[in-house]
Image (cartoon, rainbow, N blue to C red):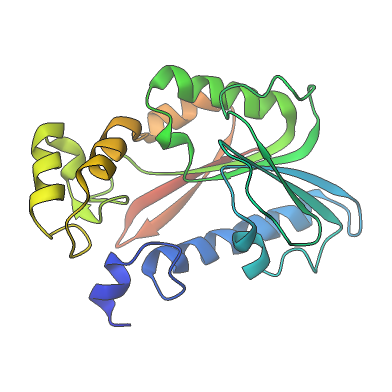
Length: 222
């Protein structure tokens, strides 16, 4: 895959630039796990919005005494040892008691919650049910908007963005289906560094860099 294709490909593509960033982020995350949990100790993880293939591909399950619960709007079929799945709402984890999980993990989910109020609800719930947390989101002010692979589209009116996505092929070299474009434009509320610090007061911020600029943040207390 050449550089342009790797830049435009979705992050779940194994050769995409997004996947390379994800692997680098996971390396940082794993080092934090090693520092915070005794070797061999059981680790209960809630992954908000996660997938089984993400963990399986990272070979994480073979290294640690870990059980991962995936939480998504719809329960997903899972056939991976030590991973279970359930349906739920990131903004309302009232089915879990305080400190139910050793760690709450989430990768590029909190920006998909439509409103600032929903983002605050998710952050509050994450910190309530998780003894530790590691929550990642793209940087609102990075020059390439991560979901569309387009420069500065986050700053233009949504009507104009809808036209670009559905009437041209400049986003990932294809036209978006109108319903998919509208869904993304409705649900995505990008988060700035200032927002992230408000959502997770006192948390550390791991910043991913690209060309000297911050591409994404991960708030954590590890």
